[in-house]
Each structure stands twice: as structure tokens, then as C-alpha cells.
Length: 243
Image (cartoon, rainbow, N blue to C red; front, top):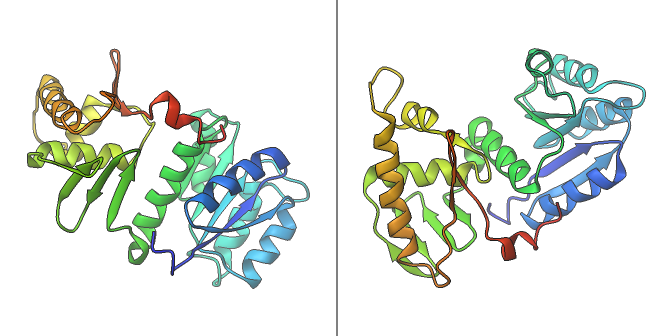
């Protein structure tokens, strides 16, 4: 993110520890944060000073998260502010309810800061394209979306177009398991019949290319048996995140 365009994120969370961890990790990414623990107060603050994005807990004093979300969607000043609902409710109908009140995304507790940051950036890219990043970074890998260059530890990594697309999708959603079918639909589309083993072949090539530039022989692509793949930080790097 361009540090000269510091975006403000409103964190509406009544659990102080969770709010502090969220704020810490967002500030590390260069965002300005404001924390409010009360639903009614948060709605009033957002309407007076619309933030660039709101992280909104479901269960709050005075007003629930869905009530706050619905209220903000009715006000012209906040109707377009991106909202990510946060909740321990993990059932599909809970997610549908949150989204039906106008939330742009829904994340369930417990979650890792890495996943949260990825969701925040994805929502901002989708809804506020002017703030979309021109490069992606994960651990020691940098992807330039303008020049289509990839480097690891400062070394160029040569990737074929499909491997580049796979890596981009994974870097946009780090620590999130992506099924083979999901990758097929994102890259080839839903109308193309592609064997899932094709994804495995491209992942093998991607792994080889990334490992060729690794200084510590760490494979950051984790295979989740019978499901798919995800980018995962090495254990030492995880110590830098408060989880």
C-alpha cells in the first residue's frame, strides 16, 4: 500500500484483546486504525467521519453488528463504505444473514492476522480499485503486477503465465486453503473442462521455480491432502505475527 495514502479502518470489537491484535497487525501494514467497542457509538462515528473500511463484530453492546451494518447502508454518507463482518457464528445461514444486511465479506473467529489482512486487501481491491496495490509481497517473495516480474530474496523467478496466475491468487489469499477446483475456475473459467491433475502439474512447476531462489530451502506452498494448496509462512516467520 502507498504509505502516502494512509487508509483508515474502523475496528468495532468489544473484546479488547482481539481489537488490540487486529489494530497491531493493521498498523504494521500501514493502515490508520480507530477502535470502538459499542455498536451505537460506532454507527455515529462512522457517519460523522466515514472510514475507508469497517471491521464489524457481530455481538456488540447497545446495537448488534448487523443492526449497525444495516443502519450504515441506509445512510448516503456510509452506504458505500466496505464492511467486513467478524463473528464466532460459523454456520452458512449466519454468513448469509450478515451478507444480506450489506456486509462485503464475513470472517469467522478464530482467525489469523494473516487471513484478516488478506481479506481486508481483497475487499479494498474489489471495492476501491484506486487503492489496489501494484505489487504483492509474501514472506521473501515479491510480485510486480505491472511488469509481471516475480522475485524471491532479490533473485528473479521465471514463471509461465499459468504459474504466475496461480501464485497471484495464492498471494492474494495467503494462509487460505484453495481447492484445485477453485483454482481451475479462477484461471480457466467455469465453462472449461480441466482435469484437476493439471493444477498439480502447475503447482509442481511453481514450487520448483520458487525453491530455485530460496536461500533456506523452505517450501512455502503447503499441500492440504484431498483438498488443495495454500501459501504458508515458515515457522520462524510466523513468530513475527501475534496470533
